[in-house]
Image (cartoon, rainbow, N blue to C red; front, top):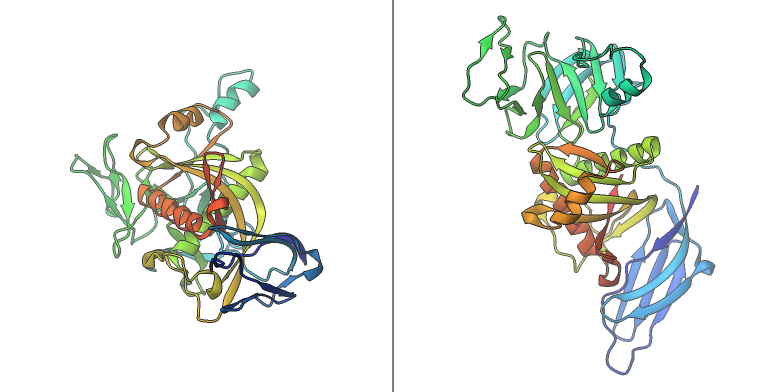
Length: 376
């Protein structure tokens, strides 16, 4: 059982001129607002319970709706979307799937070592610790056949032994065939994108003739005996990014991030505020919200759901927006960069914008930043 401070979405019916009496009823499992003309009830999921006696700050804000603050008891039974468990899934046969369409990328790969990669600046730090020439100079960390190396937002795997590989989308440059397995030695300016054969989504990049980088937002890794899990795209992207932010903030005390595309462009500035929020969604709180069908999660009629979430501040950097702030963040060594496919950066920006639009106007901004919640 955990204790949360919660915000309940306000009723959107504006009172008539001169004031309209409201009868507000709070029970452990619901909140009901009655007016002479209407009755709105928000029912909570079974795992969430309100503490009626804790109601504070009750007020009606014109243009917003009803605001109040309550204590909430929440028992989280939700299972986080797996980003590949280093301990439990090592030494198992795993299958790599394209998250967007379910296409098998690597089948029945036995991973004997699943290891985290050092931070991106590890090479510079070696010079500070060693009193002799860097023993790791010009020695990139490439996984062996049964290895999987885990970076901040990607996996590195070795494709040498796979008969089937995702198709490298190469620019028309000279290549040299190294073996009968159709591996290529790529010249420096080659297009190294790895795309899904079925849906043409970018999955990662070719790092060498044998090593491929797969982005966490594009790949699902499952034990081979399990079936491909169907997860709405919006939910998957939110969960992966939220978990990355939480893990990096815990491990490195980093709370500000730049979201960068594989093309090197910065798309979003993110500032992690907290990681213990609880978001409750119900049909009653979403009727007036614009829907984005391609990103819409499945919510059955008369149902509600509770999600653990992280609260973030963000600034979009597309179309030359916030150039000065973006430049300042990029030069700040305390700010961490997460690199994703450029299309996924735009997806994430749309998810953040959609989430921001669900908040009442008075809660959408904090200083010059926009506010959003990413579900875990």
